[in-house]
Length: 205
Image (tube, rainbow, N blue to C red; front, side):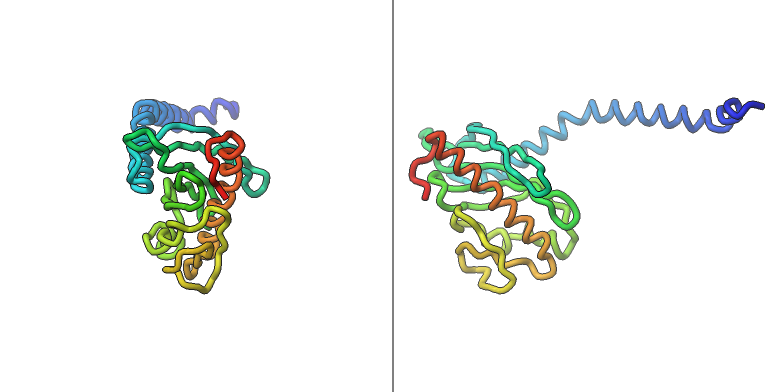
């Protein structure tokens, strides 16, 4: 008996099963993929509204490339937050960092003049339970609200309730804390420069 014939006799059921289940997964993904994306975007929209509650709608303003560590590029989508009177009340954009366990995908909001951060949230964060995942808790995120949008500094010891450029790291989760602060800093500078260069903001310091 040839080796090829022997292999086929021993493994044909496995090969057919693998093909069948692969096809089933592909069909399921095609059917549910758009709905999953739609649900994810709906959740992001809710978080955007929570970060800038005075906004009645969000208008796509630009896409800006952000340099990440190791030569990687992340394309950030910038949205202009508009009031009922169609006046700019702030800006929202996404950012990305590399945490301890996985990528950290963020949503960052700033005021209309790009002088202060109004808040941050996470589109995706899968850090270590009880440690890195505490970045998504209000106590840590509150440090960013009203902090200056001109560069943040991570510190291990400090007053987490004081709103300034210093962000106190999460105990036992320095890597995650660093990733979040770096993601904010990496995104703010090029986006701010882009908006200034294109005359979308004038009063930024």
